[in-house]
Each structure stands twice: as structure tokens, then as C-alpha cells.
Length: 179
Image (cartoon, rainbow, N blue to C red; front, side, top):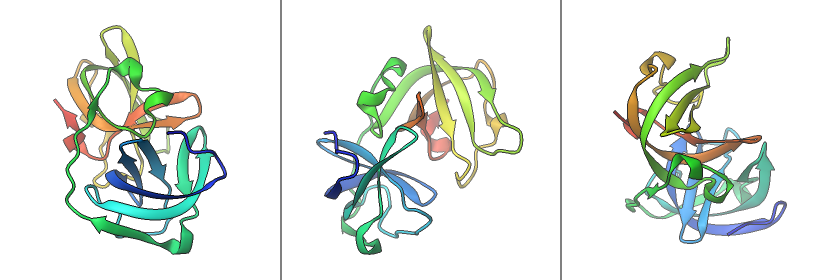
């Protein structure tokens, strides 16, 4: 469901992915990004069902929860399993934002790096549909751009992210790229 920007919310959901200190969470109604603002929340572990209160904001198009109340995220349960939702590359869009997804049959068409920046985009296509896989600068271990070659074929698992008008699949490790 769409959470109104600027609203304060309390949510219980499962962590589907973590990238550096930030995470994606999901329940039966939808998914959203948690911006930890450099704070290290030990409960943000994939598979943990967590509860938190915070403010809904939007950063460059991505809906997120920030200003975590009392700097407190509580793990309600651990080891919850969850499967990615299978979508097409064309469905990497606003309707699926933050959702934990799998997109199969991708082919690398290029790697777009920016001098002096670690984060980069892997340009892909599924059939004739173009799209983007985002490699975050904070990945640990980091995935070097040389990991990808034009013509590589793979399936990807990750979360739908957004930066301005561009939606992409954000991966958390090489385990999310199934060659």
C-alpha cells in the first residue's frame, strides 16, 4: 500500500535484503526501503521480522522510512523465509518499488561507471526490453565492474530501487547474480 509522505508509521515486516546499513523490508501489503542514516541496527538482518516506527520520506523518487523513533528496531522473529516475486524487466517500475524480485534471462549490454565513483550501473536487456542492475558503492564484498562482460547471461535477485526517473534491480552480493 502507498504510505503518505511525511506520515509517521509503525510497521512490522520482514527484512528481505540489506545493503550496508540500510535495508528493504516487506509484508503482505508491500515493500519499502529503510534508511538507517549511518546508524547500525543489529536487527536489520535478512529473514528477521522486525518492528519499527519512523517517518515516511522520499529521496530522489525512492519511498523510504527514516528518522527511526528512539533509534530502535526490534527483531520479533528470526529466520523467516521468503521467495522473490518473479517479474519481467519491464515490470521493474514504481508499482514494484522496494519489492524483493527475480528477473530471469538477462543479457549484459554494457557497464556504466563514473570516474572516481564506486557505484555503477549494469545495462541489461530481456528480449528487447532494456533495464538496469545497480551495484551500490557500499556493497561488502564489493562487486568490481569487471565481474560483468557484455553478452553475459544471468538471472538476478534483488530489490527494485529508484533514483530520479530510473528504476533498477539492486543486488546485495554476487549470490544474487545467477550466471
